[in-house]
Length: 220
Length: 116
Image 1: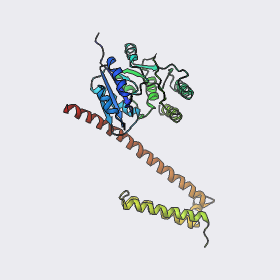
Image 2: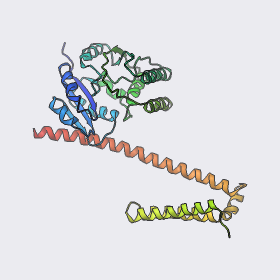
Image 3: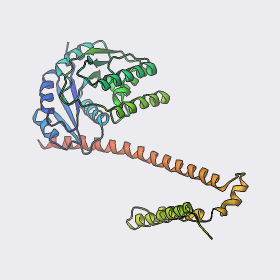
Image 4: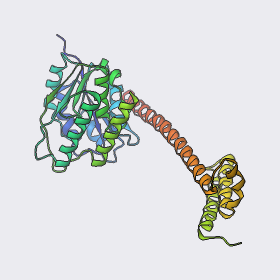
């Protein structure tokens, strides 16, 4: 059976230090790596290109959601059949990609969950749990790690989950659309990579995500 | 005629509004119409601050006990209208900007490929 054309989409903002390594590690598992340089002020663009990625550049920083949308639009132009999202900061291990593709044989969309341990700051663990609970209550979808950006889906699913959010709210919005459209989903465990400085959403971002969840529910 | 402190503050605010409207008009940030509207608002605010009794007839006509209540209610209505308008414009501009930035990114990428 022919392997589906798989494209990785990696949004990147000021990730010159790690992007080349992320691209090089991803290349063996996909057919194309698309990096969307989201208005970086460092050499993210050049590093990603040198590493072999197909790089798009936003002239100004628009946010993760906007960058992923640009990447998806380009991936679909390139006839991608499976699209995989992963982060540019090296927290997602590309060696997990085959597990996504395997699970996608029976699913529309596959999410991932990290094992929360003491290396993740407590406030992030608690925040994640709170958002997971909010999503379960509001949309009836049970996931262990709703804020993990490592996910994959078939090309025809893109129009069903296409998001409005330009920022981190995208993670929750995709889940909301998955629930609303009754998509066949699964979640798989992934290796969690930690760096010295934990980069992620802040408490204020978490509060904003919660508020947006309520607004999305009201919007229907 | 004696003016109390808050009246003077209100008058200064109204005159400041007039001044900034004029500055923006000079810098071509405001059209003549925008300058006229904001100037009128500034002048009205200054006059009402200095002569609050002038709105008594209007307040009585709509059964409000104190002109200040009318002032506050109208003020809130105005503020909320402006905020709503600004928010709508901002959201529309945000969407257009995202679409434009995306188009630029895709077009530049295609140009690079053509040149290779």
